[in-house]
Image (cartoon, rainbow, N blue to C red; front, side, top):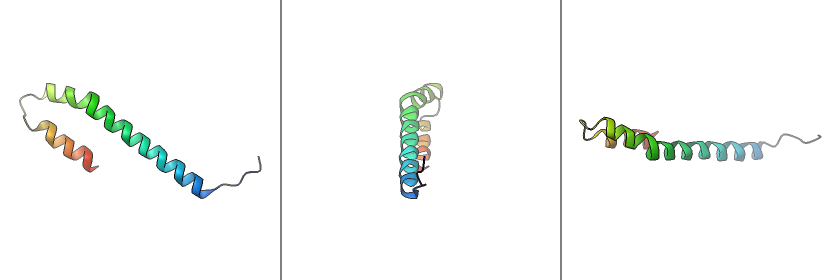
Length: 58
């Protein structure tokens, strides 16, 4: 193992990993959490819209 650390490869892998994690969290939120939250907070009509803006802004 005489390989040198390549910064470019590290940055590419780190970016791909962070994009993958963010996409999976958005899928989890919109596919699982949001429907349950809207069902639980039926008395607050704009609850889904408020959280959607906050999640997408982050």
